[in-house]
Amino acid sequence: MRENQNTFKGPPKRYHPRGLAIVYEDHDILVADKMSGLLTVSTQKATQNTAYYRLNTYVRKGNQKSRNRVFIVHRLDRDTSGILVFAKNEAAKRYLQDAWQKFKKRYYAVLHGTLSHKEGIITSYLAENSIHRMYSVNDPEKGKLAETGYKVLRESKNYSLLEIDLLTGRKNQIRVHFSEMGCPVAGDKVYGKKEKGIKRLALHAGSLTITHPCTKEAMIFETKIPEYFRSLLNT
Image (cartoon, rainbow, N blue to C red; front, side, top):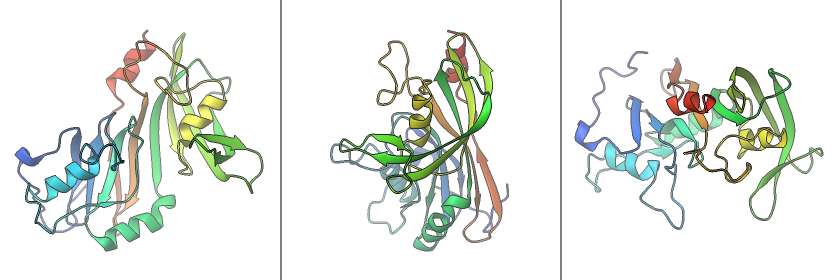
């Protein structure tokens, strides 16, 4: 993958944010690999312990008066790890958000149990209840279309490792779809079951394909499947 605007040099390593590995950066976008447990954006309870806050500090080189900043394009759940892209100007943000549904997003997950069909597409309409929990409905007027493509990569007695193509981007879509199939994502405290010994939610945004907002070049960003996912299959 080549630099799109001459040679870009980011801030010194001492400014690199905790919990985020910089995958790629130029004058228009910043791509990071987020750790599980880190919020994308702030909540009422957490304003600084977020990817957004830490990356703003990073691009400002520690100078809060700097005009440099990042712009939110999309989000990952707190406990989901993986590829997260931010824009570095308003024009890039608008372009990426407008084209977001056309981009390819691939995830990896470890599920409880095994699936009868080892490859397929799950389709439903997702609605949200009063406590912000998502669930599937059959009526398209009561929910938003959600499609999840998947392929089983490996199975053990208790778990399955899946490659997942997020064909639509609804809230908690992957977690809801597999929970409703009776095979929730391991470590899911909302849509799964209470369990001891699981260290984290076993869901990882492993690959993202976008078109660069300035050059219109196709760019693919990838991270490895966490080793913890593979170790789960051996338990």
